[in-house]
Every structure is written in structure tokens, then in C-alpha cells.
Image 1 (cartoon, one colour):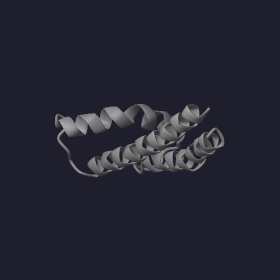
Image 2 (image 1 turned 90 degrees about the vertical axis):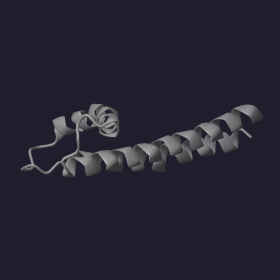
Image 3 (image 1 turned 45 degrees about the vertical axis):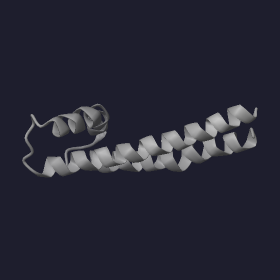
Image 4 (image 1 turned 120 degrees about the horizontal axis):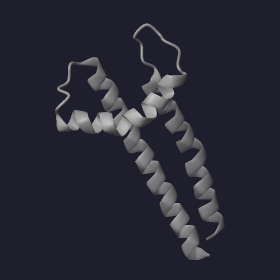
Length: 98
């Protein structure tokens, strides 16, 4: 049980780090949407490929807002919710198994 507890604690930390990194990727994507970024730049292409699948799903449910795209903000709120709910839950499970 001790090893399983440590594994779940490590998993919680890894999930938290991945979610934090994805927030920065979403912020980067939002910033490049404000400027005329080169669509062939590898960084721009990575940011678009990493965020488009999730942002497009969110945009399907948002009403037209006259050119204002709130999907990155909604995605960040969702990630923060996961960090506030999922990570502490995993930490508690891990601590209880030690």
C-alpha cells in the first residue's frame, strides 16, 4: 500500500504540472491570436495544434460575441477547476494509502 500511495502522490504532482503547463500553452495561443503571427512558425503551429481540439469544442457551445473569443478563458477556468478538485483528491487518496 505504501508504494501505491507514493505512486498516486507522484501522479497528482504530475497532473498538476501538466495542467499548469497547458494553461501557459492556452495563454500563448490567446496572445498569438491578437497579433499577426506567421502561421508557418513551428511555435505557432504547435500552439494551434495543442489547443484547437479543446477550444473548438468550447466554441461550439458559445454564442457569437461579435468577434470576442472567450473560449481560452473558459478553458483556463476549467483547468483551474481540475487543479482545485482533481489534484487535491488524488493527494488525499495517496496520503491515506501511506
